[in-house]
Amino acid sequence: MSWKRVCAAGEVAENTFRKFEVDGIAVIVANVGDGYRAFPPLCPHMAEPLVESGIYEDGVLTCTKHLWQWNLRTGDMVGLAERKLLMYEVKREGDDVLAYIERELAYEYHEEDELDDDDFFSGD
Ligand code: FES
Image (cartoon, rainbow, N blue to C red):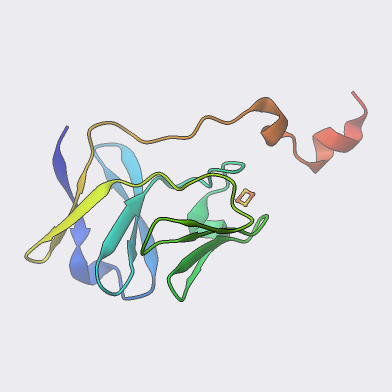
């Protein structure tokens, strides 16, 4: 793959993010004010869909599930986060936001991370 048009710049208002599909790959685009960021749709912690669990405020994306946070302007981890957010390279061309999608970026999750409360208390 290569540079792909993800959306029109106007589709993502400043300080918000939205999920799009590009050739079957789900990508979240965030408008951070001075530009756009694109990243996979799942939280790197326990695969929560960030469009549901994520809040974006003051340049910081927070997954409300366990409060991992990332500064979307710099890509840095903030607070409790223990894994970086994978990012696609992004550029703007005219009214379009493009991401460099060579392959789908995805996290590897370890089994102990996938236990939810029900598993934990089931006593198996
Ligand atoms: S699933 Fe997002 S912080 Fe735990």
